[in-house]
Image 1: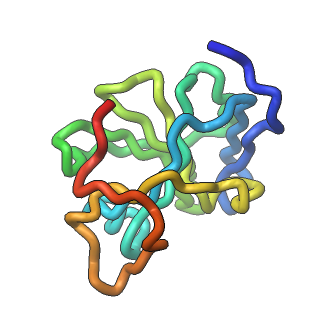
Image 2: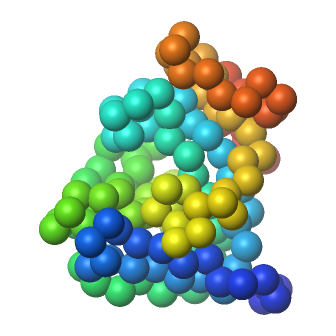
Length: 142
């Protein structure tokens, strides 16, 4: 995998007990309106940056994980700080090399630049997202 020359992406939980850093750029950035993201975020969607090299994501501190079957039926492992409860990353059983972090957990959240909106089919009428984004009823494949 080609090493990026961008500034590292860093972030973590609200209390600072769990931190992450990667030297790579995200391969996918999206808002997701699936029911899992709605429930987890307590609002209408989640906002994610997905990185291709989970092995290159340095994580310090001890996160707790819980699993859920997403709208796709695939198992997702959500990690959160056991002290403050902040979501810090997401792993995918079907794609073990990937890791995603919530946009709000970034030290510089302004670096989030969503490419698409996924799971539009699950959108709540009150959760309006940038209408110029390309939308998918579910997760795009390929």
